[in-house]
Image 1 (cartoon, rainbow, N blue to C red):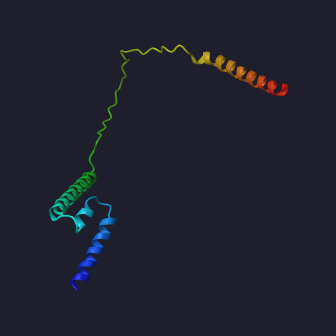
Image 2 (cartoon, one colour):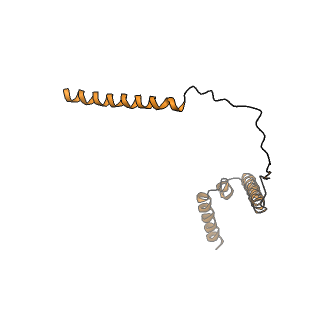
Image 3 (cartoon, rainbow, N blue to C red):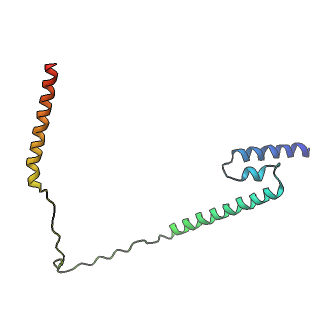
Length: 123
C-alpha cells in the first residue's frame, strides 16, 4: 500500500516540478538529488518567496495610503513684473519669406512632373 502511495506522490511531485514555472522547484521535488542540495534550494525558494510577499505587501500598503508626490500651491500676483531678460529671435528664416519659397518649390515640382510626362510621351 505504501509503495503505491509513494509512487503516486512521486509521480505528482514530478509532474508539478516539470510543469511549474518557479525556478528551483524541479530540484526541490526531485528524489534523485541529494538531500543537502534539495534543502538548500528549498530554503532559497522559500526565502525568495518571502521577499516577494514582503515587497508586494509593502507596495500595496504604500498604494493604499494615497501618498502625495506633488503639492501645488496657487499664488496670484496683482501686478506682473516685466522680465529682466529679453529673448531675441535669432532665426534667419521669417514666416513671410517662406511664402515665396513654397510657391517656387511648387512651381519646380509642377515643372518636373510636366517634364516627366513629356519624356514618356516622346518614347
